Image (cartoon, rainbow, N blue to C red; front, side):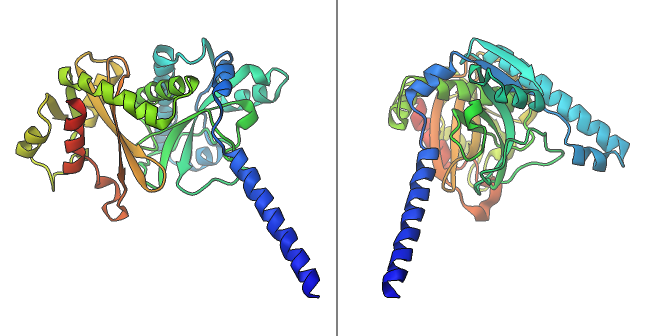
Length: 319
């Protein structure tokens, strides 16, 4: 009986080990060759469409349904403008609905495409059977537990449990036009690094060299993201000695969309393992001038934003 129990235990352990190894292999980073192959394909850019369940609910109040439709149209317009200007990874790209892109991804020519799509992400792992939900959220901002992101995937790896070519997380579930530009700029940066086979250490060293760009830029701070419990104007001028402006979000978004030559902007997005990642980007050409990670404190919710420590790092990076 003991031998039988031991045999069963070994079989179960072997099964778990094999399963774990398979999962690790499944989620392993893609190799440089995968990016070289992907760059030769055509990008299917997924446009937003209505969620049938949400449509039924919102039609009960026509003004909400009209706003929902307007939000989807605005998002699609923003996405097209950003992709037309910033997408360089593949020479060709096309706009399609999610249904069209999914059908093309299952056809004979599937390996001729990569798929760029927006979806919702959570800190918890999505079920392996869950595919991309390309539906715009309505009237909802995110918390650090839930956010929007853009993903670039091959048709072979559309499932959430499979490795993506690139994922760029956003600070909100419902992104504005400047947020979409940021996503395209950062994804180009990420894909270029991966195509060159650079590891994160090499990427961060390269970014250090870009920090000097900030000396000739005006850094735009979103006034809702400056921690006014820690920072006042005197402290900010002392810690960040270059030009900066505290503005409302819409003004900063306009600077990003218009590629203002003198502007740099800050985006703070969720990372892995309770991290928040601060990016500073040149609005003119998408140059990444800073990458800084900080541990997320759940007690502070989303208002743990630009603090004294953050500003110290911004100032050091610019030197």
